[in-house]
Length: 181
Ligand code: 5GP
Ligand code: MG
Ligand code: MG
Image (cartoon, rainbow, N blue to C red; front, side, top):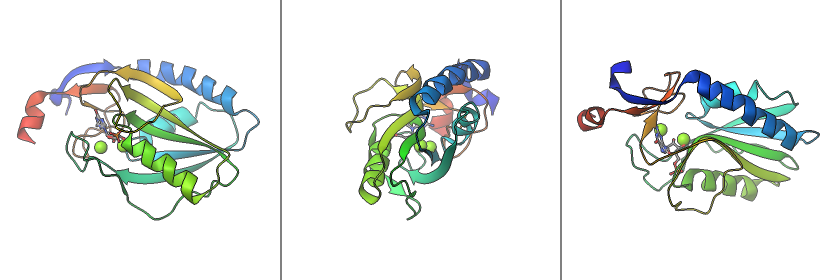
């Protein structure tokens, strides 16, 4: 598994130090507010687990499961919700947590769904990674861990064909892994 990694972008300790800062920002933003965190599975599982344990506020946690890549490295454009359940967030301040903001389609679809099917007091977005590209959908992340380039990254929750999520760091896959996959 480690042999498949071309280079490490963010070591575990770098990520955790950044999460300390991010958690402080989020804590100040939501102090005294009714907060519901909606974690987008599977990609944000590790990030959300580490981040939320650094936020000393009362909050509720819900999860949504979506797919937009269908296994490849290019976004398919279509966002599929894997369940019908929409978190009950009426009157609550919602923070949607995802692994990475790429085209913006996934988070745009999630925020739209939350606003359509419930009446949240606010909806904001937190991502570990943000790619520097033109987004297909108008979407701004409110809390961002790191900005990265266009490369396809894995680890710390991010997968390639459902593998590599358990790597403790964020890295770039070797080209030959895509070629053989
Ligand atoms: P978007 O809808 O913003 O184009 O894509 C968001 C989703 O695509 C992310 O939640 C993530 O699951 C997947 N994705 C986008 N870029 C990458 C990447 O570089 N690596 C991995 N592993 N997944 C990515
Ligand atoms: Mg995702
Ligand atoms: Mg994926």
